[in-house]
Image (cartoon, rainbow, N blue to C red; front, side, top):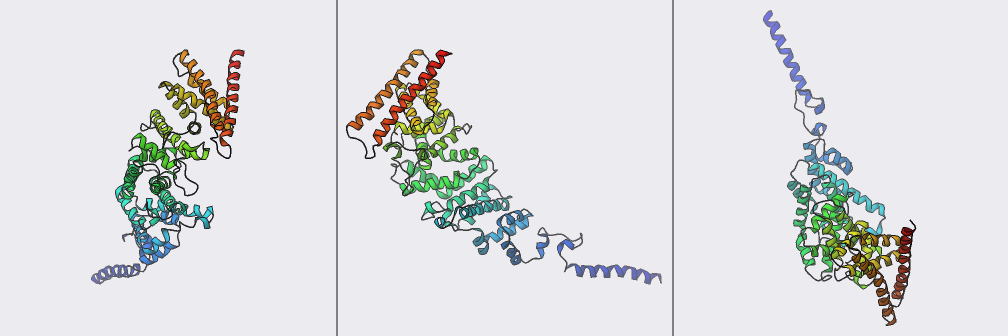
Length: 451
């Protein structure tokens, strides 16, 4: 009797265990007993891969990006989806060439799409070393022709490089300088960028116009334009310029930020030498110079930036002094003063006095406060060591006004002027500039006497 009871007792739990084990195979993983090992895919473990990928089709890129952080297995499944033809077709949008047919909102939408895609790739490849991340991403993006340096037949009308730049900016945001340097080197290797730059800086300006344009578009749209932080922009611009000697840095700066032709978008090399230019033609250069000057790194000292400005003013030939003065004004007080003080220290007082005249001329034309030019001259005067040097400089400024007015007058009298009388108008502005400049000097002098 006792033996029978023991047998029944041992059999009943085994039967229950077997019954429960049979039922568990039909339940979702999250409902299985804790004794069963759980999958990192969670409830998705019961789904066929095809169904999982169908679900991904109904999620936005941002949602897929969030889902990729659930686990390493989920992330790998999303990577596999990206590599499929359907995933690639859906995520790697390529409608870059309908700019004139859509409004700004649609252009922003595709840029925002690639920002989200950059975040998705950033999260999916989080555990990979930088080199492996870049190789994988290149393997995926190589399918997009417009992301290549020479991949697009109409680069000016294409948003491809801008989308690539947005993607790259999002991917590398927050990375340290060493990793970003690796990214720059990787991009240079893929595009052969260094050799292409060497070709344009070692040849006559304008002799490789299409290559100059492609370098400009690639550097601006991919490497420079999408950073919100000035320090990040300065970092990437430094990577572009620093491998080259100063004379080539100036050439590259002009190619990337200088004025372009309104007809074909190519670099306008004669703009600074043919006649006075406007603010829009110089703003890009001035902003780039300020970026380097304010970078606050050991790679760019104040002397480096001033030397670069000096070198820039002879690319491709010596600029008109008015254009040089306009660039200095747009570059800000610190750069303007440092540039002029450098000339004073190096004994270039005559050149400096002529520059003062054109600073006054630009102030007159653009309706800037003339007392700014007078105060800048007063500040530069303090750089000279002796009263004799200061007096000679002031005499040179007065003589420069008279000399430049006579030069313009002789040019007009000789018949060397254009049909729209720009030369005469320039003389008109210069005479008014001289009067207003000396008026401010009198105010300053009489104010000092009265006090």
